[in-house]
Image (cartoon, rainbow, N blue to C red; front, side, top):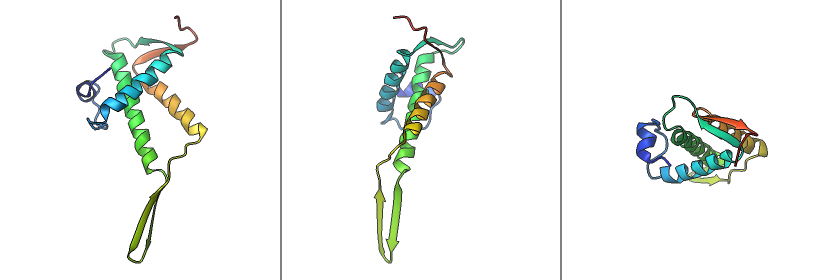
Length: 121
């Protein structure tokens, strides 16, 4: 699994803060392992550290989706000198969840070849 130095120097990531990276990298590696159960995977030619790069790409996507979710449902109200802010938990429709899963696979495919239905145990 890649570390933060790999993320910033080899993958050239710049969005995920260092203190958050291990959690996102672990989640991304788990996602890639689940994809490995569905697809035969091989590194793309001339792509060094393809799996580590794929983990970083998925981690970046997860981080951005989490940031988007934290902004969802934001509301603010002001009456005179009184101001209140409320946030509602993000409720995502099945289509959004599905499209995110598709996106994770797409960003991984920048670094890995995936072929469905030919996985060998």
